[in-house]
Length: 373
Image 1 (cartoon, rainbow, N blue to C red):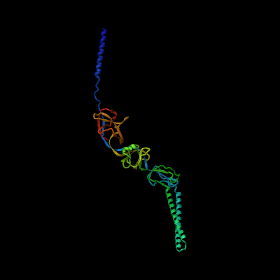
Image 2 (image 1 turned 180 degrees about the vertical axis):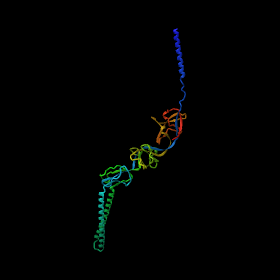
Image 3 (image 1 turned 60 degrees about the horizontal axis):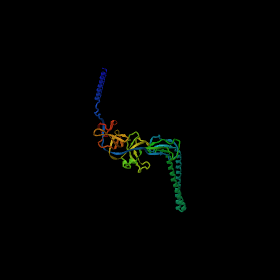
């Protein structure tokens, strides 16, 4: 009896296990359904003609940067301007003690007056000697001596007049004036200091409008433009300020070196910009974008559509089966906020421009055409 009962229990358990096994097998679903396609925005690209442009680092400088020095020496008694202020040409900047120069001028005028009287005396003497000579009362030699004395007195008068003019000029030089319209620097000497003529530096001045911007391009960059840049072939020069904004005034080339610097391998260039609002200051570092010539068969893509890997830059392109493909590209420069694509795309390609981080090669998507930039 016990043996038969054990056998029945074993048989019952086996049936239950078999039944459970069949139930599990039947409960596994078939995963044959395709995942739902992801909606993405795509840009249908077409070739465009783009001007050739390149950016480089630049530095600003005043169109005229001048050192202000005195033309006469003396004691500096007053500064007549506010440091760092804008001044106009001819505006007084410093005053050198004028008293010694006024005294010298008075002396020169007295000498001139004295010599004028001497000339009159020599003239009358010459006339008197002439009458005596005509009556044979004196010799020719005596008459010629009178003529010579008159001529020498006349020459001395002209010299005295020149000394008066120089003294008057020196007196005006005691007031040091601004040679140009511009912005003044700090005073290099203080009141009471002794300054020397033509050597002591009083201050500096900078003309801010127009402002100049110096920059250079390498040999390789010049090849892209088709050779040397100059005033004739450069169409546009734009300054990009340190905050990333473009300066509203466009510039023009006012200097283009005729040779390549043998040490740096670059061509030196300079552009001039109107700077009436004085927004740009000398010595600033900025960037310039130079446009010259035109190229064709390039594509423009938003920056967000261009990805970077160890092998270079690439984009996701949607094929005819709505499947994502990887396309390696070669890019040029930025145009505003877009990339210029030189190689790797074909006309009509649909490039994914959003949801890129969720994609991978082979993903099935639902493309939605977006407007071309």
